[in-house]
Amino acid sequence: MHPLPARTTSRRTLKLTGEIKRKQRTVRVLDDVTGSSFGIDAQTSAPVRRDQRTHSPRPAHPFAETGALHAETWTLRRAVIAATASTERCEHCRVVPGMERELARRGLRAATAIAKREGLLLEEPRILRDRGNLLVHLAPAPVVARVATLTGTRRAGDGWLRREVSVAGFLARAGAPVVAPSAELDPGPHTYEGISLSFWDYVEEVDAPLDAAEAGRRLRICHEALAGYEGELEALGTLAEAERWLEELVAEGTIGAEQAAGLRKDARIVRQRIEQLELPMQAVHGDAHLDNAINTSAGPLWNDWEDTCLAPRALDLGCLDAAASVWDDDPEPVAIALAAYGEIDPDALAVFVSARRFQGTMWLVLLGSA
Image (cartoon, rainbow, N blue to C red):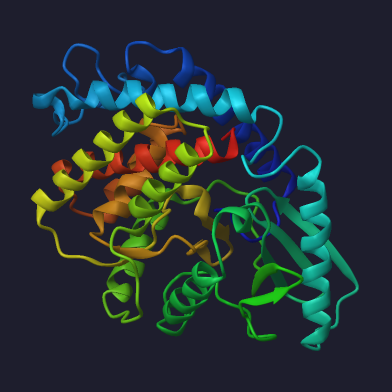
């Protein structure tokens, strides 16, 4: 769930600041007793913008009449409490302390071995990022290896990597604004000593603020192109995966029975509300926050398609909105991107913000940090 290219110095600083803010947000999720950490007005249950000086309140959340939204907030908070207590020494509940470094070593070894096997000339492999996935620039070649290290300990096989290469390749061939699978060698996915990875174009990020309006417009371009994608995708795959993670975490003892019951109820309500919308479904990004729009000299390129699934387009808009309304990213570029995207159904947006909250909280539980 991370961008592919290298960061310039100032962009790296911004990224580090963002990671610190996300860790602070986890603490607020634990401490807040009003629901406001999730952007919920305690009196009306209506989601509101973080900065009321510049943004108007949103329409009332569709869960408000049942009171389920507050229950959802409480059960999510309890889940994070349980998970944080058990994973504070490592970033993944299946990774013991010290194992992450070994995963990075194995990942780097896998990336260089497969690249050499495929005939790629490389002199100075450079790690760009090491978190859920390990990203390695295989310099001097314009190729980035995306290695499923921590992510691969939770997701079985390489199906999601195969799906990502397929969808991004389809979009690139259609001329959509995306980071493309590598043309320098077989993009994969490949497997080496139990580690799966894929290869992507290396793109240089410019040292300038992201054009959020253009990112929003280009997300619509991607959606329009994806309407023609015919590959097999799981319906509401990001929500379904989060539900599977919940059951795994319960089986592992990370989340208790009471918390699990509340979370299952939350997921069930989200699904019911999505069904009531009766919106058409197509291929969507699945993780469409602005960190996944890479700022290049050619404009924003959408990246990281591993969560692609079959869903209403509003799922991606909910991901975009939730970055600010739930996870406390800067609301201004998010609002600009949403406005530039075009007409948006506010009821659908609210439902998919709630779906993203559920999915994102399960991810927090898995990694123990954000």
